Length: 558
Image 1 (cartoon, rainbow, N blue to C red):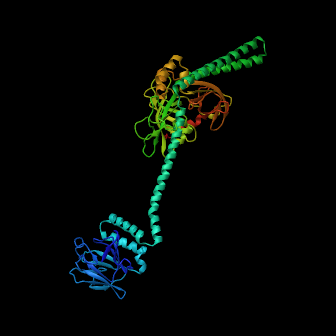
Image 2: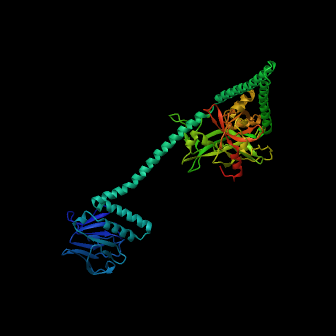
Image 3: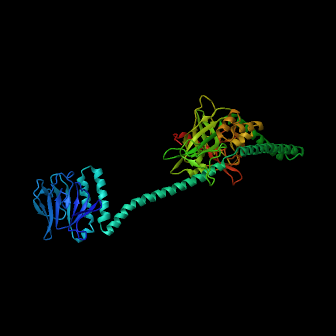
């Protein structure tokens, strides 16, 4: 009798008997099955009375009573039953033969192929790995349906046989090998999920810092008022110093002081007056060549190029926030992008449209700790708008970064002058002409919008802020239209001269970066770069020779 077991296996004979031999079906209607045989006689054919009955439709090459396998004197014998369809062993037609382990049987020309396994008792429960491999290889090869299907069949039967027929250690190893890829994929997914969560937490935290640094309408008005007060106090102080010095000289003259004392005081007064005259001359000659720089930048996802956006904003402009108060963000949709505004100073070095400024203005994200942390393998910064406003010119000029110095905090910017003629500033040809104690003049736009609005009449600045709000683009455009963009001039003295930097005490602050530092002959000797806040307001400039070297280099993209 024949008993069919679950899909990949079967047993012929008594269930308690140990299999004398096994048949691995490589092709035909039973392809992929392995049958264990515990009988002395196995009848083979398509007739349903056979112990091994093939499908008469799918296995038409097999006769109803085709052959039989018998166990005689501990040998396994195959006999052909005289049907018109031949029986083949290892591709040879045979009427009768003693079978050997691993022989290949075929019943009829083009009929099903079977591999016989003649094994000791252990074979019934534990099939050697090499036999499993060979059987699966032969099953896949017999399919003759291309390498993709063959590979799928091979691995399918290999996995099944390893799980159900191999030794316990091999089964454990096979299970481990099967589960390992899933474990690795799961682990990778979990790692990526955790990394993504960490990145999102970092982005939310940094966006909160960006939002905290934004100026409200009320805060802007307050800052403008404070700046107006400081400017008034500074002018009063300068006038007071000049009046005090003049009165002192006159008093000394009346008191008939020594000629040397009076001469020294008069010389000091002339120096002060000369400085003011020189400053006024420089401002009149070159103030129109010092531009107010205004721009915005954002972040894009490197893999997709999609910008970092807020999930949404309220009518007040405040972004949507999560339960912890952090701004919600996304990389899809058409919601407002996350942007950071900045201002600075630049000055004309070539009338054909070349400005010099600081590198940290061409790459504004480098100087901001919060935004710098957003730069990584997933996000990169990108300039969205970069414009130059010249004094007295209502329309801005779009800027592109032409060249960036890696040795100094300098960069060159280009724009199309469009027929507008603005003089370039003269650059000092040699650093040896600068001396410690020398008087200097710095032009720029310190405090950015605050100072520009503070120098306007109260009703004018209030009207601008009412119409433009805190939008940087609209504020800059309104200031230009009202001809309120003019550089601020501050005077001071050279404190120290080093190879790569110039120290001076002229008053300036954020926004004045990139402005020209003049000697009283009207030559640019340095480019204002940074403030030493812990050193009494001292400032650092980059010697202009680094800028001259950059001009001589072949421009490179920034």
